[in-house]
Image (tube, rainbow, N blue to C red; front, side, top):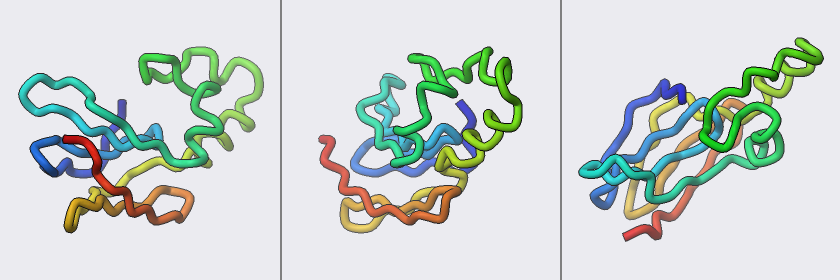
Length: 106
């Protein structure tokens, strides 16, 4: 998992975005992922690029290098640090979308 931004603490959870287009809500004591939020384009292309353990698939470049690069660039990567205000998480993705996500995890 590639993380480029800074994590924050929100409601006793460690929250950070990842290159794979997901926001992770992690218990800082146990390291367990409590929940995730996934960008729309990441949902559409995720299984073509990542395995079920969030690891980059080894066969991504086997078929068509340019098509694979287009999928990666369109993934909706979360490269910046999220911010929170009044139990809402704000962040942008690499496709130019801005998100406001309510944190409902307690």
